[in-house]
Length: 137
Picture 1 (cartoon, rainbow, N blue to C red):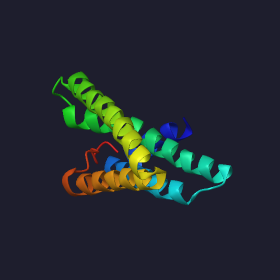
Picture 2: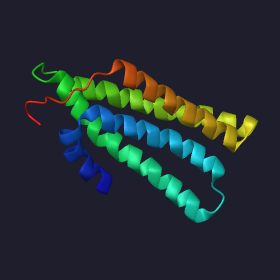
Picture 3: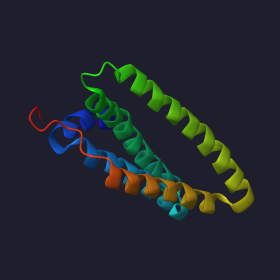
Picture 4: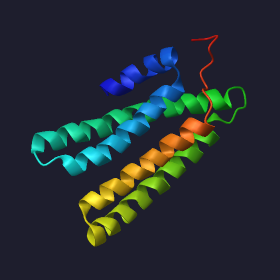
């Protein structure tokens, strides 16, 4: 909740793209750090990184949708499409990760998930423009 509260303010100052990229980086780092963590306190810290990314994705994602659909009357449709994609992603993530963990082990699975986050980072970096209106910020 703290990250979500701060994310909106930072998105207005820094822009949406840098924060979204930071969230992808936190997600990738979480996957790698999980494989290195063997103490319960370290695992809790790694899970906090997931909360950091989720808080940013939740707030900044809505801001990006609002920016991209401004004046079109399509905000709800776009948000619904994104929510559908997230639901499919959550289903596939759990299904694929469960299979990989069973067949290849936990560490391999977390490296694969971290790699997917890195791929998301690269795609977002290369193809997503900054959506913040600099005149308003």
